[in-house]
Amino acid sequence: MIKLHDKYFKPFISGKEIDDAIQRLATEIAKDIGDEIPVFVGILNGSFMVVSDFVKKYPKPCEVTFIKLASYEGVKSTEDIQRLIGLTQDLTGRTVVILEDIIDTGNTLHEVHRIFKNEAVKSLKIATLFYKPEAYKKDFKLHYVGIEIPNKFIVGYGLDYNGLGRNLTDIYKIKETQHMTNLVLFGPPGAGKGTQADFLKEKYNLVHISTGDVFRFNIKNETALGMLAKSYMDKGELVPDQVTIDMLNAEVEKNADANGFIFDGFPRTNAQADALDKLMDSKDSQINAMIALEVEDEILVERLLSRGKTSGRADDADESIIRNRIAEYYSKTAILKDFYSEQKKYFGVNGVGSIEEITERLSAVIDNL
Ligand code: IMP
Ligand code: MG
Image (cartoon, rainbow, N blue to C red):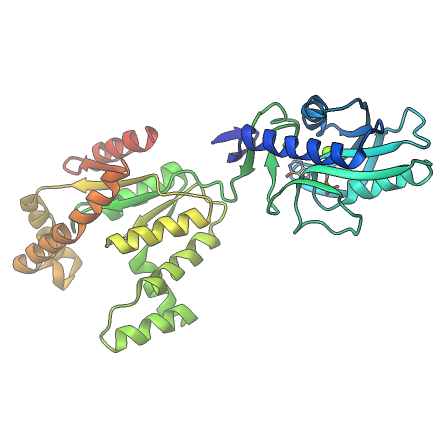
């Protein structure tokens, strides 16, 4: 992954794939043009790499020139195309091939056609290395297309984000969501998860998603998903993972600009961990770590019993219930420890000590991710 200005980009198309596509274009175009000497017209700035590599692969004599147009601001194409350098030579009677790095909305291409309308060229063909069919809004024929790509912002190989990225030899795609620190917080009852989650979310500007809270919120507000979940609960059945995932998805989408998330109470099974990975992946994101607070059973029992004296929570008052909850935690979560260990994402943190000490231990893990 790379960062240009404020945005993250991830590898998308390799230099090798680009090279192959340009080779195909050169071969195909040379075959169509035959023995005539074409003039290749690159559209600056973006096309300088394409033109350079293309003409090196072009198997016959050719001429090269450039015009310079500008349309992009940041990551958005604008209608207002500026003509910075126009045609500087007479192309009457010539076979002209426009070489573009990328065709997006087609606004730039429209301007190219306007420039050539009054030139009595013999033929005008359009070739582009990249093409975004979903973004294209014009009717002009594209004669040669290297690689079709989805309607996502890319950089590299001549293409820039506010000036940066043109020099990269591979193509990178923008990360749709920029959240960088996504944690699954784990710990047996009484380990201090809630307390620590509150500190971490402040310190790292994360959104805390507690599955229990999300369920209660959806049911209380009678959202469609809440009602669906309730219908299973009323029958005494487990809520299917997909319903929970859909609720989490809604939470993640609500916070698209977040720095990251702390998942608390989810996943609890391998299937759920898989589903969570898929959810994050669909958001161009990932779980970075599962952090488990480790506390000995005897200390947990002690903590919970003393909490029960003040909180009035019935399940904190009875020692055998407490021991059962702890045992259940270990029997269920051992599998998840394996799941995340395999991905080298499991971090056990000693949960015994002062609140500050534990926060420091957690921060050390997060800062190292
Ligand atoms: P169009 O006028 O919308 O077709 O856009 C064409 C111009 O916008 C290209 O020549 C590029 O300079 C720029 N552009 C379009 N899409 C991208 C992209 O994904 N990354 C970087 N520049 C782009
Ligand atoms: Mg361009």
